[in-house]
Image 1 (cartoon, one colour):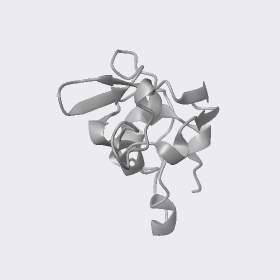
Image 2 (image 1 turned 90 degrees about the vertical axis):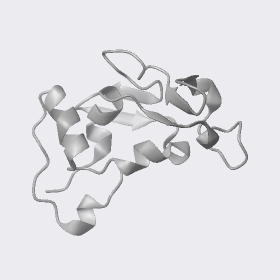
Image 3 (image 1 turned 60 degrees about the vertical axis):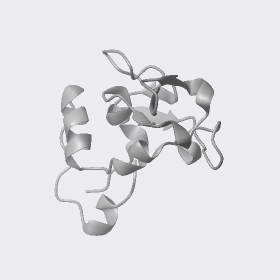
Image 4 (image 1 turned 90 degrees about the horizontal axis):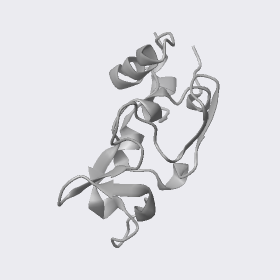
Length: 114
């Protein structure tokens, strides 16, 4: 089964997206725009919109389950890069939006990051 995360977006609208502040563009080598984050504590920040429930990342555009895009895809955090189409986190988020799970992906498709 082929899956395109740009037709889903559930993970971006379900989980708190938190990561080390050094991934923001205020740190040398950081890429995530700091203006799109909020502090969680002294070492972690979260994407705005994911600090509440229901969650919805400020960088996510479109309608979950239909057509979405990430406004900072090439600058996204390591926590965003870790979620893979069809993994446990992906399917948990999909369940929250009444979307069917992604099952039995060939290895090369399972390694495509959301």
